Amino acid sequence: MLRTLDRTLALAAAMLLSIAHSAHCATKLDDSALHISPSPLMNGSPFLITLSIPSEALSVTGDWQTHHVLFFSNSDHRTWFALAGIDVELAPGSYPVTVEANLKDGTHQTLHHQLTIETAPYLQVPLTVPDKFVEPAPKALKQIAADKIVKDKAFATSAPTRQWSASFLPPLPLAPESDSFGNQRLFNGKVASVHHGLDYHAKLHTPVAAINSGRVVLANPLYFEGGCVVIDHGLGLMSVYMHLSKIEVTVGRRIRRGQIIALSGASGRATGPHLHLGVRWQGTYIDPAKLFELQMPNPH
Ligand SMILES: [Zn+2]
Image (cartoon, rainbow, N blue to C red; front, side, top):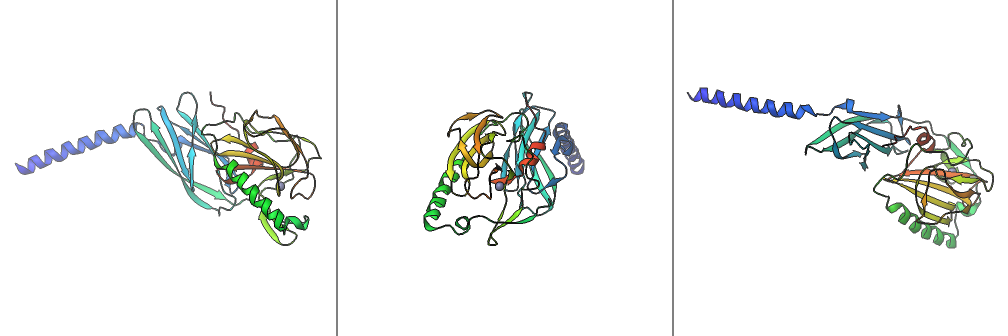
């Protein structure tokens, strides 16, 4: 009798479990819901995550390295996108990315995915600049410290919503100096640093366009950067324009994609007239050339 009851209970429990399991499986996401571009992925590259889900989600977030990734969606709330970056210093290998969807029906779905990161071929380049940029005098050190406060403040907060639209545009109608992002530079044989941007050999006073829409968060002359403008594109993404001869925008101003924001120059730690463009995502610098190649969604 007891044994029969046991068996009945066990059967009932198994049925309940099976019902719960199939209900869960109805909206269970797998790797096919996730699309990541470009391919292959390399250190220093931006990447676009697209999540397609069968039911509406209220929000989608992700975890990548030490970053919390915010997604934005189409109006149907079933296709979600996020732009993220791979640190240039990240060693090749396989790394986890986690995506969590908070569905309208009150359930959560979590996807774990491994990203394979390959090595980008970055070069070592010796450069010569005036000594004051390699061994700054005490007065310059004061300015460098003051600049750091200005930059930290500008970089500290990014708009919580996406400010950009469509794909990113180059800042000049010129080809960039090839492979300049990620180079390991040795200044005057002494100071080594990784080059965190793309250089364009622009003649003095060439108009510089914003790579996408956003808001100006810095518009100042700085010691190393020279004339410098930073635009916040939201969701942690910012673009940085350096060595400018003339700045034509002020902090707080809204900027349209392609709008002229400055004239190029040779100010700061520059070996000659050029535009340095940096793209920063949550404190990580990514290769602007790879950002221009990414086909960005235009959510409706
Ligand atoms: Zn540069």
